[in-house]
Image (cartoon, rainbow, N blue to C red):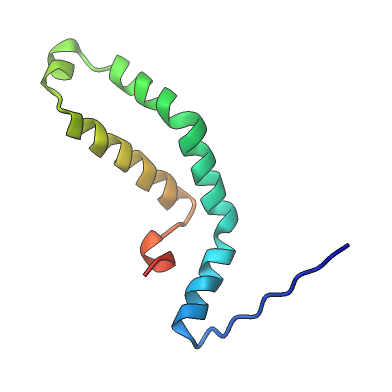
Length: 87
């Protein structure tokens, strides 16, 4: 079996960022999977539950805001702070 060893200098800001990305890779993959597989269905359910009067008042930006709220909620639930991973 092949093995790989990564070494990070955690005193170096760039290496520390690379380390955090490596550590959070599984969590980021899970969030991407949830976005790709569940979000369309979740958004459909959300909009189906809104009364017509309220739905007709919504703008496209309302949908964008709802989707972004869902993405950030998933990131939070997996401990992903995007601002620590990308500078």
